[in-house]
Length: 569
Image (cartoon, rainbow, N blue to C red; front, top):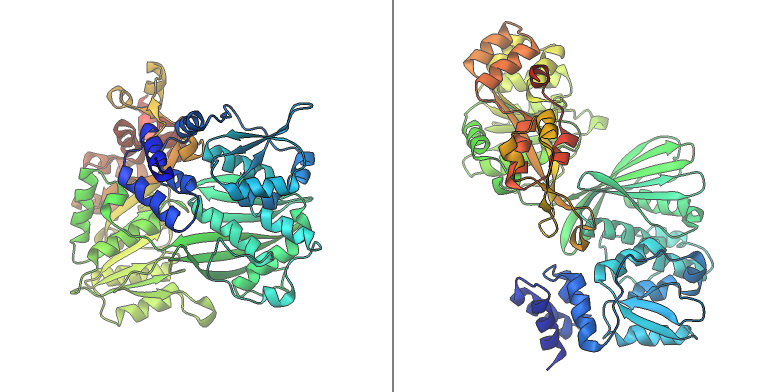
């Protein structure tokens, strides 16, 4: 039996659901002379723990069970990162007088064995381990970009020369052989994209440099090589050069952007620098070009029907509300993509343009040349649009122009920073907009939040006390199908993979129009909206819990209890 056939047989025994996908990955890797085991496991079709045990049984190799211990500094110094990371070999501290345990997930990698034999003079004890366990152990033990860092230190402890720093890097190539700050920065960004991160934060501390990724809305510390603080200035300078920022200016905040290419797709990176007492902190927002459709939004049938009715309106304003990072821009792009037909002219003004939609005229705000939201919106309205999207209602002037546009036959979309849908009404009135204009121009307020989606591989039914369920307000029948997050290799032990939005849609009905014009209180407006069929964020979250999409804990994390319900309780 060939190696390809053996691996596919093991894949089947390890729970592979789509064997053709596995076969293609293994065959392609064989042709390209890449690791077939790694290619198979990268498909995500195989339970890595089961696969490691099955492979170990077939080859007579022991398998490491249990937690991977951290790599102590003395062993890390003896076992260089360039060997460990390049060949995916994880050393484990041996017992006194015992050979060095070396964990791997691909026992067929002969180059790895040769490399290890070339520098390690003592005996070794080869063991198999799940791929994710090996990679996480390497990442935690050596830090992201440690291989490059190791090479730099061996070359004399200097990062790239000045002429290297002036180069513009647009392609994140995993096989870049140059040991420089360019490669090191690329590795940080590439790993963030592989981990589905939306943000990277590089933050100088007193005696260290902290790197954090925001994944599924939650910040996670990323291991970095020891002594990286020594190269803080070079690292930050490289990022600033990529974003065409002034590397000599360290006292004032700066903003910029980088255009990258990752695995053949364009990535727009927004850069923001913040001066601090310990040095400049840099934040990178990663914006990939993505597809926008209603299926990804996860709307309930009722909410989808309401939204499609709104999109069919000839004029009016639809406002998306929520805090920063709640998915408002994605929702707006989804709306525009569904309206983007040949018989409609759609124009947007944004700060910045996060995603490009073919067929839509998109304008980026540029305050330095006085191209503000208000100025841009005036120009847009002179250009005969059918649909207008304004990135954010930031000031009275912009809001007044948008209202005029809605009243003169345009369909307008925009965002507001409020806690709930009804709060949008109060926010507009507080900005100085006349209540009768709000009531006559705005068609709906849509509030949203993002909840993490349960990992389908490891979630399991959850049990809660009846009293607890009553206290949080979830109907018992919905809690009956609730699941909890467990954590596995596929979700990096978080229990979650991806995010889904929950919504609160307030349609401005004739009753609400009258109440807004009459300056009714926020509480009265909320009660009236509920009587007209509005379901609040938490109630929509309970629906997602009942479906098995998310957990009760996630809904509680991103929503607040309805004041009226707490009074009833």
